[in-house]
Image (tube, rainbow, N blue to C red; front, side, top):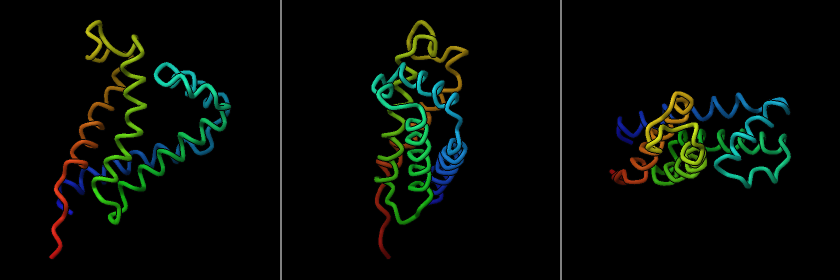
Length: 136
């Protein structure tokens, strides 16, 4: 694995792993708030009860983080996992008018926190497009 790929996977993997672990014991009230926010981009999440939603988010982030940190997982597969979870985050960003300026792309003050997901999309694309490691 190249140094650049290791950095892309290590930093983003640690970020997602820490984020998912931090949500493991999320109180129902916090899960409800997160679910309502997520529903602005992915309305189907309202079909879950808040505690189940919180667990799904937590386990998903832990799984993505672990796949990025595990060297036995290919770059392409890790990038696809990262891209899949990131698609949900980006849908929240782009479907919520409060997150972007009038142009619908640049982040508003409220959207600055979610705009990091544009960088995560680039990381996912780089991992998917990365050449396969040569066997020596």
